[in-house]
Image (cartoon, protein in one colour):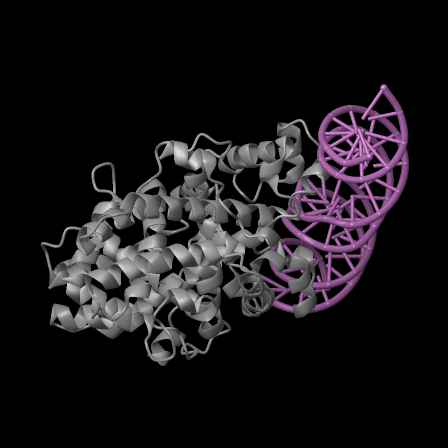
Length: 223
Length: 223
DNA sequence: GCAAATATAATAGTATTACTATCATTAATG
DNA sequence: CATTAATGATAGTAATACTATTATATTTGC
């Protein structure tokens, strides 16, 4: 798996960036350290100036890659969804029983990323924390419809559609497979967040994982 | 119901504001018009200066009520959760069958607010749109643990706890009542958002409501 | 009814943000 | 080796997110 990904480029919609950051050393440093910095100080306090200082580069140079920090966030989230979709396809490939396949799929999309598997400049463990804490902000804006038209959210929509298909494969008569799929995806992130910050309103802790909750939920709903 | 609320003050944690906005004309204008303005231009573009212009008052005067727009958002979300809890308690009061009670509760917390019921300066229909689009931003910050310690999120946690209790009343053996409760609350807002902006990843539309989805889900999980 | 207290308005000022523009320097490529 | 492209340095702008100060209303307490 690691080898496969090393040769495979995760594709992010072109319009999100001005210059493809994966094609240059500076671009790759921008990605690597923006993930670290956003994780450290949060998206609100994150600025291109601070990032420039961290990577020993100039603010103006970073603007040649991304027109704003919002677009950088779109890039990182898009990258993550594409990466997760890749994991999903790879790890369920060839499974014939729909139940097993769905079970595995739920595992993949609800688990906390604990290992940096792809050995690139993008650290998925840290990126996952950004997804939990910041990804909602990528679409909770007034520009969402415009950006959606530009295709900025295709990766997110595609992985949910895949999950939906797996749900319908288990129970073709279930009436709300798409909403269930989107609820699993967003709900898992939310439960991870609650586990870290509001443990009184989640059952998830060190033993009970969001995966256990959603696995139980989905198979009760579909049976 | 309307009469009751007219005499009842929704309580928001004191530390959220500098001066209680409900106690003065200017304060009430701040609340009324901040809701309108945030709904119009979004939280990111919203500033106290613009609000001041809208209400014919001065930026500096608004700062005497709230130390930042983040705290204003905390106020509005807190107010909403307290208001919703009030609806929940009122509308399920005296119901004896746990199943009926839970069914009604799910209806209350998943429905889109369509009528301004309390006749105050706070328009709940518009506020609901703010909750859908902006409320996550109230806790997705680096300061969340600090603010949680200060009690800024008690209203949110309390309503989820109430819902959890109703779930457990229906099925005391269900293993994840708290996570189910928080998933319903947050998930309903998310489905409303998807309905408005990403209809390909939800089943909800004009006919199917988030309520239909969650009602079906919960009673399948608990039976 | 008036003094004192309080609330609001007006103005100014600061540091930072989120950029854009220009020009110099360095590195890559044909 | 000349041209082009990428990066860096510097400067500048409008807006943001405030704080501070002073002036002017308004309320309230006696």
